[in-house]
Amino acid sequence: MQRIPITTLCYVEKDGKYLMLHRVKKKVDVNKDKWIGIGGHFEQGESPEECLLREAKEETGLTLTRWRFRGIVTFLAEGWETEYMCLYTADGFEGTLQECEEGTLEWVPKEELGSLNLWEGDKIFLRLLAEEHPFFSLKLQYKGDTLLEAVLDGIPMEL
Image (cartoon, rainbow, N blue to C red; front, side, top):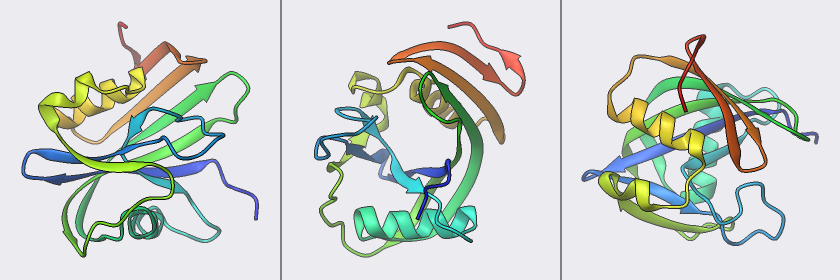
């Protein structure tokens, strides 16, 4: 089945920490060695919430019980299709954390996120989440690992 370039990303919260995924297990991975939230590609017929819940269960073993849709992020990168990502946070879940096939899961204090190997654009939306920014649209344009442009709600940001 062909992947649709629409994805979800979720930061699961607990005790002032986010559940982060260190992408170190797959040989070919656009996110190799980066720290990201959990999530993945939509499957045919899925709503954003269905994708969110399925990916959370597959990657972590957790069943999300409370979440918020926080924004939509548009990614442009040389050599890649445009990707649209539905960004969530979740602060309710059930179950036991399991190992992930894509990397190592770790609860990271929010104040320590900046010391991780993150995409530059992820730092922008993590800041927007921390500031409780209302629902937003963020467009990020990359060349390789370099962020060339960020546009928040239609207005270019200074990098």
